[in-house]
Length: 69
Image (cartoon, rainbow, N blue to C red):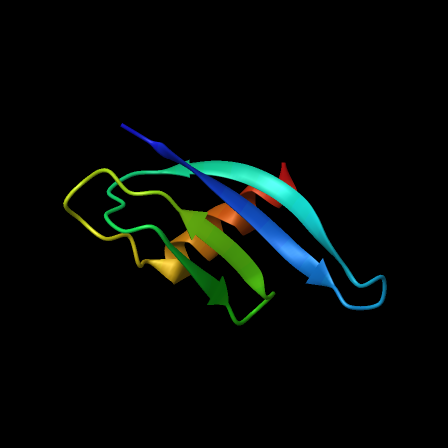
């Protein structure tokens, strides 16, 4: 099964959050939010499996690839 991740960035100039994409990921255990330092992307993860998805570099890479298409 896959679970939704909502990616959002914070635009400091306009002082508002902007949703930039929706992706799906597997193996999420705990509901948590973590940020990618490279672009301050926040991922909200919803859980339902036994493994924790903490592969930030892979998710970042997937997101960059998505933007190129």
